Image (cartoon, rainbow, N blue to C red):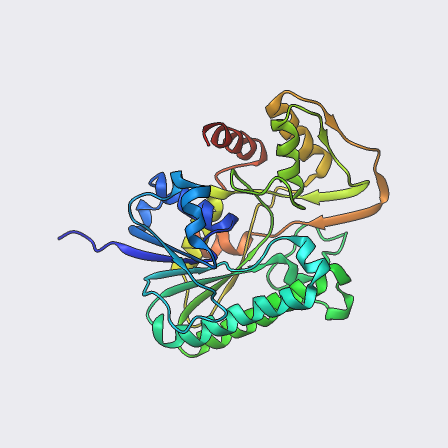
Length: 322
């Protein structure tokens, strides 16, 4: 008797996460999860028909809807809640508004999910921002890190961090009511659907490389970052969702391969055969944002299939096709 195919709902389906999931579905990479259909929900999900028609394959359904104000939800076996702006300028220009948007979208979802997704497996996409500023001497930050007081988080990142913490609390309360939920604290990523005109450094590096110009590094301190490829991201989110339970475990999602930003730029530059323009850096300024992913590896058996070099190469190949 054939296995019944699962229905996946992606809330925030028009953003980087949503497009990466639709891309994986279109390439058959969700078959191991027995997913037969994907519902991409966003305020204007139908714009994907013209933006990325190659991702709208049979089995994809687009649903326009604001998760902050909806009064109903599509049924789904698996839910990935990834609805939040990732444009840093919005949090700088309208921090209170963006904070309220994240909170409202999570609170309303949790209210609806208590009945509509009572039997679903759910992962809430949070952020490594909940940890505040990673101490310079801490190579990798783990899920049990004691988070600082909000006042100790830099002003430009404070509202986003607080909103994600509040959202996590709401999701934990949903789980306490008996719903199967997990939390994915996401860090930094690379892939063909990452914006190349915002604050994402590696996205800007790709914009330089694609244009045939030298890859520019603007940071003048010792900035350490790590990048998970979007295919790994999608696999991890689904595995974490399926592992959801009323215990509501939180897992870091990202790569633990921490590299100086100059080394990241050099890897992208080599891929495109251009130079990397890396300024002299100050040893006094250290900015680190690297997760420990030991918990996900140990408890869920998750692995990283791409290091930075292979992730950059895979992204470049995908961009050449799109």
